[in-house]
Image (tube, rainbow, N blue to C red; front, side, top):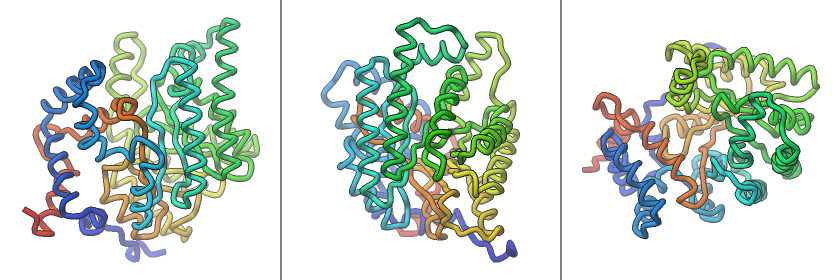
Length: 395
């Protein structure tokens, strides 16, 4: 198919913000304006955490009315419904994520499992919610995962604890298969990722026989992940199951570099942004090339990588909405990618966290920090919002 016939314009702000009223756009502009002040984000993040821990009564309503509303769906599943329907009106799917992470007790882990299974039931009743997402650190103790990663022998009580972890994750994946709902399992820090990979591979071998239900997440800012993606594909083929692959750049760069430095081992992250971008794009080419045996999601805010996957799908004559080829962006960010992809008929979803405000604060702080301006420039998001306000003549 001739490339000249392929048209996708991510700079179209009219399509990008068609789902926002003038008033909503003004509120978003105000919030992103605040987030473009690095000192304010640093101060606000620290102050917000302290105030939440002190359970000051005024904090939760302020967070809920500002940053929570921008980046989360609601405190409950039912609270997300209106937003899910609104996204669907613009041909956009939803990936639901119960925003719990870093939990430490069996009670908390079981609660996260229950909420995730409830999200699967909710998704099954919504055509526009094909997938739920979960984090292993919401279902297993960090110390246990670290010990598994170090290949240390577990005590009898830890063996029992690990069995419970596997039962929880198996229950979620089994329920996903029963209800026809996919399960994204997030990647986390390198020092627990091997144990996460082992668990996810077990689940894929069990539940991805006929359809892709379980997806592992590949952080392409790691210099070993492109090879691991290809190896995972070979293992899946040898085991006669389909590979589920969510491609992301990665979320823990500074943390990874600091730990590698402190502990004296090589930094697992690419030494340059270009190397990371090259690996991500090679991963996109790989999953599109093997789309019949790999169900994938291009989960990035990078316009070039997103364009590349859309272009490859188009040029190969694959239906734009093929179930194995998906895109996703975080709710509240990169609307120019999401809604222009949706308009062009691609499978694209907003990743929508939900849960009590306290539980999603770590997630919200990461979003605020991501959107903070570098060297005083307005972020891309803020610039596009201002452009659309100008186009509409909003003062």
